[in-house]
Length: 471
Image (tube, rainbow, N blue to C red; front, side):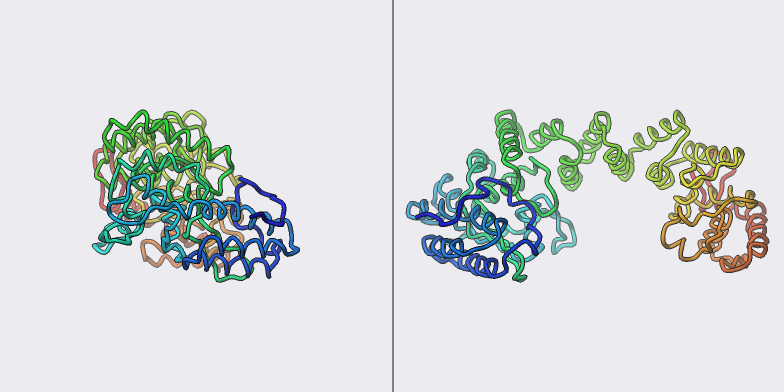
């Protein structure tokens, strides 16, 4: 049996669904109907005939290529269907992996789609606690026709080598990603997709990273091969170790973007100390600035401020601060962070620096964005004494502040407005008032801070923390 269309995308990634304008609508409607037949149990031989009929039509290369790519997987199912074992509790380990070809996982729902493309994602369980979606799915009892994926999960780690062996298997399954949009092609998952999802769910390991909503068979062949090699090496090195140690082995080999969800699961499993140790090690070897900030924030939420201290040391050396650094220092920092932020603000005012990326703007806007954080009001108060010829802030402000402050707003205007809003005190600061009236109101806020506010929101010494102040 041969397709009449040339093979345009053999073993290529289908990737995210191509732009709908590039597809032939009639071909996609016919293909989507065939996907329904696959899902509903039509014989693989009949399905292959349907696809051949679709490929006989004239259509754009991108549509023909996508369907041809899926057709190759369907032909594998045609060849294997006669030899599939009977489903049942006594089916062999190799047999139950082969039966993944008949899997009908309910991925038509958007949430359940994560079973395949995000197997380590967490959902809220019935008891109100977060749990691995696969764990919830696998709680059903086994019976004669139990979904093969559930049987595999229930058999545990002994199934891992069989799943790894299936990572090269691009045979079609009855598990489909259906769409009701007749301009968008549905997709048929392959045996390797389900095998990878089960492998990750069972091991709680993340063997690759990809774009959102992308499953394993979508990947470029080189990346698939690299991922499969990593999985094989991981099993060779860790099969004699416990589940937790095997997860740690992999985390030491990968970057933060890949390890992030694995660490989250460790925390969920009450292995917080181990998670912190891994995060610190990742911070030591991470070159990506955004990932470093994410690691630092994750550590801080776990009560470890070592990353925050590194930020303080870094800006002390460079005398320059980014928006993300300021936000993290304000949210999680202590006295040393407050002192450094105050020093940077005062240095700007002393030098007259007020560019869009000046330290004072970055810090004060970060504080204004999070006024409930203990050090925010004391930092904003530093701007109250510098309200002359300050220069407008509009181009730097986040939307919520830009909508409530005039185009001529200064750093002092912003500080007075936020302090008034947060403390719920009426200083008669009117954002729509004239510069003269706003300046008088700023003076009232300044007087309040000097007479009363610092006692409520500031501090007297590093050894004493006032109510509402910083540590």
